[in-house]
Image 1: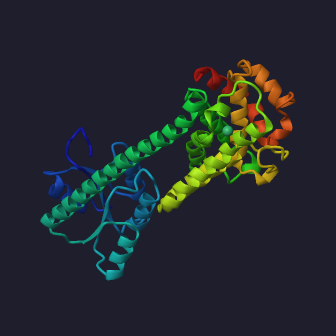
Image 2: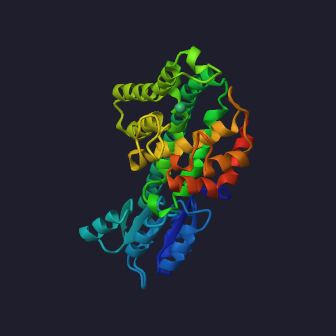
Image 3: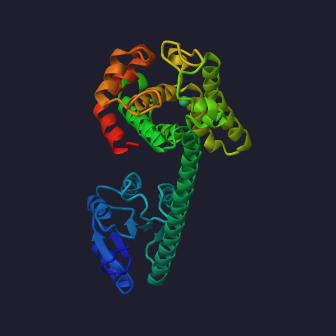
Length: 361
Ligand SMILES: [Fe+2]
């Protein structure tokens, strides 16, 4: 509503000055009014700020007809929500139907009774107000639910993290790295169509869960400072299996299909974040067998391990981590990564560096 006047603003669109004057006289005690005598002017006024609260639209006008104006209003995100009431001397049923089909909320035939026009306008404004309030409530509730969901996911991820390294920063950093890679790869032909906004969000949301299976690994092995025996390493590998089982059980308990995309990514990322492109990872998956989520997380996880302090090594500087990932050392090799994911990392490595500094342990 136009806050300056504190009264709803009605845009009157009519090529006949007489009718426009009658309408102004009818409405001026309750509403502020704007006048357009043609379609182009009507569209300009409707799209301007502040927008009118309702449009009274004549059907028969020279040039652009009221139907066309209405269609264009409903086609524009700025004006689609403004209620339109058609006014016309045409009173054939099909004309009224056509107007309503185009998205108008009401249809008034000329000549009109002033009191009736005012009542119909007020009714539509009340409806619009209620709709807006409802939409606001839904948005507010959705925001709350999303926040709760994000907090729960973080909490789960952090539980595993606290047992492991006693810091939650690893999951925040790796989540950011995954987001950076996804956004950058969005523009690459090989991934065209894969990374839409929803997918990127789901990837980022599921990322904190990648090591959740570590809660199933005994402290003696999880916290062992020295090198692991073969059987201990086999046990460590189990965290990917445990993680996937946890998400499997969550999925079995949930009946909401909308959660399935998120849970699918959560399952992928828990199970495949230690896979390597050349097939030498935990489960021997190779190349395209590894889901994209796992390929991104693998690089994010390795970069974070390199730039963080571990019981067996100091934290390497960004430049050293960059060198190891792109040239290889005894443990890490460039062949471990999807070449496009690796290339993306090289292109945006400065952004990785910023995050590693911002979210340092
Ligand atoms: Fe892991």
